[in-house]
Length: 117
Image (cartoon, rainbow, N blue to C red; front, side, top):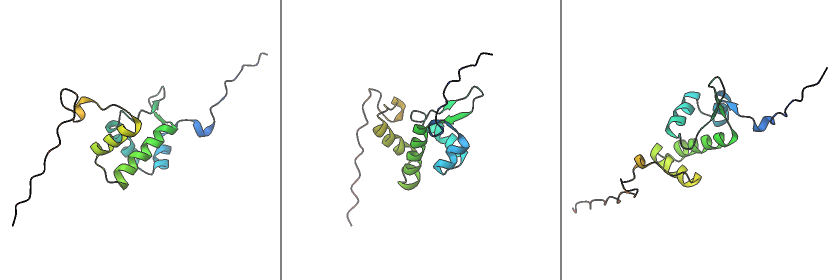
């Protein structure tokens, strides 16, 4: 009988993990990860199995941990966390994310002077 060659398996530390394991590693609920996946889609794209299950790679786990840090510890809003992540990961933001129609940032608003007493 002829022996089939098996392709080498990826080491356990480098294999993508299911959402339940990612949830445990990051310390948030699975529904939170699904929500973040929708909100931070430009930074977080887990691979999908043929059956449609999410599998999170090491880089996805790092992004999830950074999102958690920004939202829970640094108390950023989702929009603020997106700005920080876009600077960190050098991903260009889409025009609907607050940029003007010509691709420039809107002028900063001036604060009103408080009335003198």
